[in-house]
Image 1 (cartoon, rainbow, N blue to C red):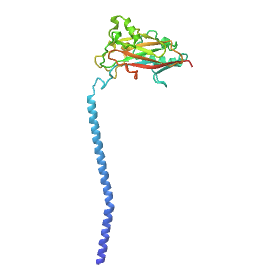
Image 2 (cartoon, rainbow, N blue to C red; image 1 turned 180 degrees about the vertical axis):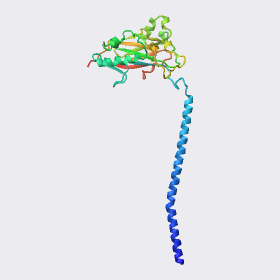
Image 3 (cartoon, rainbow, N blue to C red; image 1 turned 135 degrees about the vertical axis):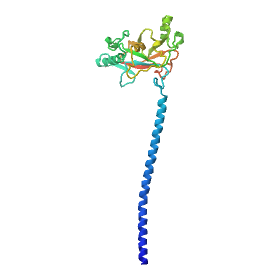
Image 4 (cartoon, rainbow, N blue to C red; image 1 turned 90 degrees about the horizontal axis):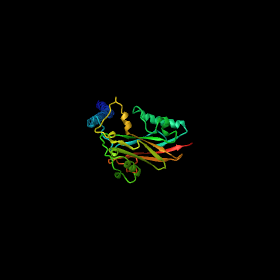
Length: 278
C-alpha cells in the first residue's frame, strides 16, 4: 500500500510538473503579446496626438491672406518657354511649320490669360512673332512680389559702367520720363541686334509696386489685362544660323540685386537660342 501510494503521488507530481511546464510558455507568450500590443497602441496614439498638436500650432501661425514666406525681389520670366530636351533653350527651324506653330501656340497661351490682346510693336501673331522671318520675339514678364516697392534709378550714373547702352537710353529721355521706372536691358554673346517694346526698356514702378499682399480666391482669375503692363518685348535681329548663342536680360533698380555672375536668374533671366537650318 505504501508503495502504491508513493507511486500514485509520484505520478501526480509528474503530471503536475508537466502541466506547469507546458502551460508556462503559453501564458508568458499571451502576456508578452498583450503588453506589446498595448505598448504600440499607446505609443502610436501619443505620436498621433503630438503630430495633431504640432499641425494645429503650425496652422494657427499661418496668415489667412498671405503666404508664410515670400521672395525678396521680383523675378523675370520669358516666353516662349516650352518643354524641350535642352533646358532654357529656344530652338526652331524657320522653314518647319511644326516648329513655328509650337512656339506661336506657346506665346498665344501665355498672352490669352490676360484677356484682350495688345500690340507689341513688330511682334505680332500675324508675323508668327518673327519666328518665321528669323527675327524672333521674346516676351519678358516681371512677376510682382507682395509688399515690394521699387527704388528706381533715375540717373544713368547710378548704373554700373558695363551698362553703357542702358545709360545712353536713360540719358536720351527727358527727366520726367526717367522717374519711377523699372529698367530692363538684355545682352548677348553674339553679334545680334536687340530691339525693345516699349523703346524705353522700362515698366512704370506703379505697375510693380504692391502696398500690401493681394491674393485671389479660388473663384477669381489670377490674371488681368493689367499684367500686360508687366511685359517688355525684345526682338532679336540678324541672328546667326546653326549657331547657339545666349541672351541675358536683367532688371535694374536700386533695390534689385542682379550682379551675381554665377546666378543670372537673380534679378534677371538667361536663355539660349539657335536657329536651325536642317
